[in-house]
Length: 199
Image 1: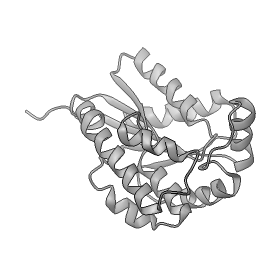
Image 2 (image 1 turned 90 degrees about the vertical axis):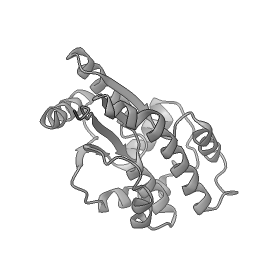
Image 3 (image 1 turned 60 degrees about the horizontal axis):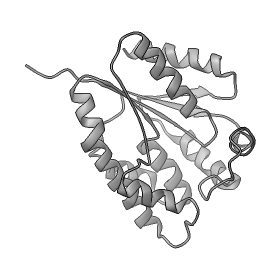
Image 4 (image 1 turned 180 degrees about the vertical axis):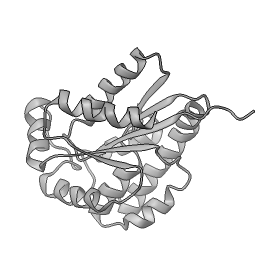
């Protein structure tokens, strides 16, 4: 007998597009329906994820290739310890960032997104990637004013504009784009519609 396969839904987009908020809303909605949901994020809090977080304040001392290897190592650990087991148990896995973010952010920094995609062949393909987009100014304002955060090395306006270009070029069958420049409730309705179609 084959084990039930869960669903992998990833939340992607530039910083400040409201991914994390929408993930929480979706998780709550699905749990209310009695579905088994696991919420996670990348970079993780694991050994490699913590090394990646240190790059937020100083990205200059690491080569792009080494940076990419950290993201891949973090994802491998994430897949082995959490994502693959949860999917095998038939759970719905919601992940805040996955390999599309690596393709976009490291692609914007100068690496080849197609090569990054190939290097992620060990990672399960998402059943659905919700790709949130909004004007970069909107995202930056949300980060600095709504969250009260200072922009880190991955959140500079010029860099995010390049990241948005990388996301816009992606044409994978599991990607659904969502206009994040609207109310939280309106966006949540769109998310629910797309997820109900999948489930």
